[in-house]
Length: 305
Image 1 (tube, one colour):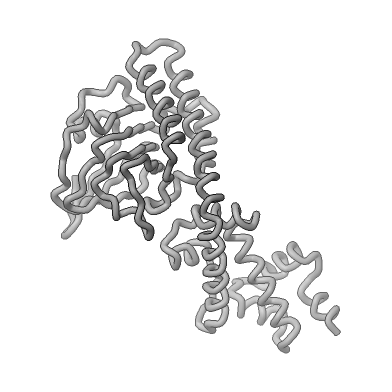
Image 2: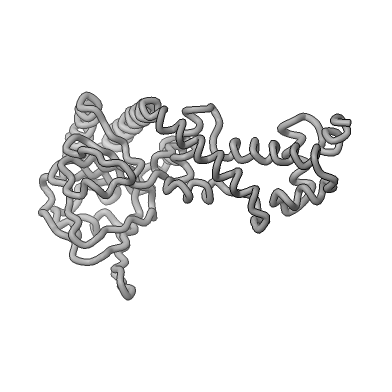
């Protein structure tokens, strides 16, 4: 444990260390752990802590005392809310925070997944890159389904380890992630009006960005998402659900739109336009333009005459 001037740094590199910090019994398995929050002694955090865990973590919280710390909207978290964390992801815990009084905490060391397809597949689940204000808010029916899977994992976890233990646990984890993917998809569909507003804001950010002559680099997904207090992955998934295109494709479309404006309305050379838009090399601009329009920038300009 290290401490900076204002923040305690806490790194948890092993399941055993996690159990020790939670004042729980020794783990049954060195690479996977499942806790019921109801069984964890309540502890109030005394100082601001930067937590870095070396596991995949899947968390279902109920009756969370930190109701107003989940982003821009107020939700009633007496029902279930799920969050997902990838290895070495940083979480900030504020003084006064407490554990939920109910729910589940599943921790999976990446080594537990080795030799299984899930070791690579788990990296494709975008919600492990979401932030806390992008948590999964579940209906009661969805929560009950997730609860059944956690209980199945718990039952297998508590059995003596045999040649099939890991297979059964992995299968249940995959089932859990599949249901979470379905519920996130439902959540994004139900928030379509909100996402429409999000699309308008993205357009406004891009327009402002290109109007600022001091911006001499290409806009990034990270820059745009930071302006909206969202993770780049969540923003991209929302836009994809709404339009079929992720954030990078929206950036490219705006680049082509601005390029066409300059090709048609200015005397800038193709190279100058490339630099104006933030490309480091004109060749990169030419390649992108042609891939999106099936014509080179110079040929496009000539076609306007």
